Length: 216
Image 1 (cartoon, rainbow, N blue to C red):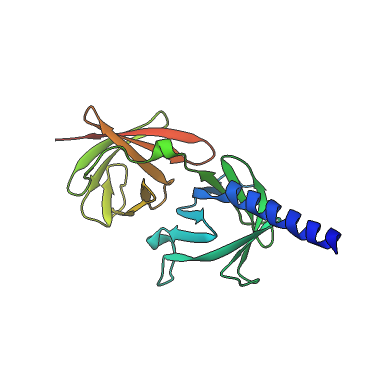
Image 2 (spheres, rainbow, N blue to C red):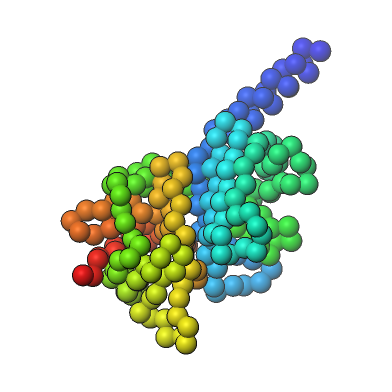
């Protein structure tokens, strides 16, 4: 009897420690396949927060056809899986987890998802950063472009030479993080506005530091 109580107690302690490791806000980075070699590693535009046995998840509205682009409820972390809303069929298998990366295993190994943990240093330090109605030069080591924020759903990129140009976007504030999603792009975190520049951080297979410089 004492042995059984000890095993139960040990299980509770392990579960508690696991939850602490999982707690925080994680943003999607990229997907990959174990079965097929992929050179694309498509970006994942969503995030999830785990806190006190509750979760909140948000998808980029325009990536999904569902009526609801977010979800919230309770979760349990058991060994290598997360069970959402006490539904054993609504579970996520964890391939690996460390201090900054969380990898969910796809059902058939072909759609594994890598998430990056958002550090508090990425929380927005500036108030009232406005984008709508403005035009910016977007600058990073990897590429440059011009973005015109037409309204709260549409961006025009200078690099877009299609007949009907336009990129849908969404901005979402959560847990102190100012998150920007754009079609066909990596998720971005708006950090601050300093010296007439808006500083952002992007996540994919590596971290990207990006600047938005307003064009008058």
